[in-house]
Length: 282
Image (cartoon, rainbow, N blue to C red; front, top):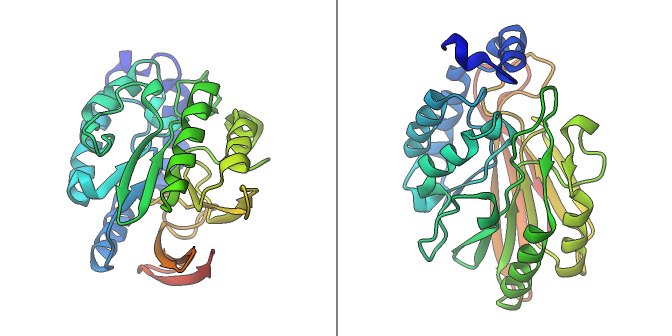
């Protein structure tokens, strides 16, 4: 890293990385988790953001290589996080370099924030990608969900619901009330929740908190599960839950969707990835 790259918010981020994340976030932990994932039958992967740390050009390029290792872009869908927009300008660069994972079924790529949400449809499942990433001030990690995105999301949910599809929303920042500290919150979370209450959805996946969480927000007819997941590189034994991934089974049963979630990852004192829990979500 060059000195000029530490100007602005990167300075605080670099200090935090040296003091904390360098020890707790370990590449070998991530590699073993991905290796285990490759042995678990699955149809599609959803990545909920924070592929990079300090917003460096080299990190964006490395993340593209890592995304390529997960599978063909049509089988991997991405939404970006606050670290992917750590400093002004880097998010647009990430959008360009990660374009294959940010492209809808028509071939249109999300190259700017107003291109969200977009939809990918896979076997009756509509993967709806929202964007909450935007550069923020030092010591802040806020996300943003504005009225233009809310209007588009409401229209998509209505259309996909009318088609009978299972609507799965990806967004980096959690939309639940009081899900994070004030300086890490989703600005516009209430607007997001109002859209879900009006049109409904079947599942919401987020990142950001680095916690294994299962909450819910009101939907049009039923509560909608909201799922968070720990960092995929978090080593066991730390303050945060160790690395894991979630595997969702989504099955149509007559007039409703049944969703089951299996958690795979490290126990807090485990050196190997294992099956941790199963949850019936819907």
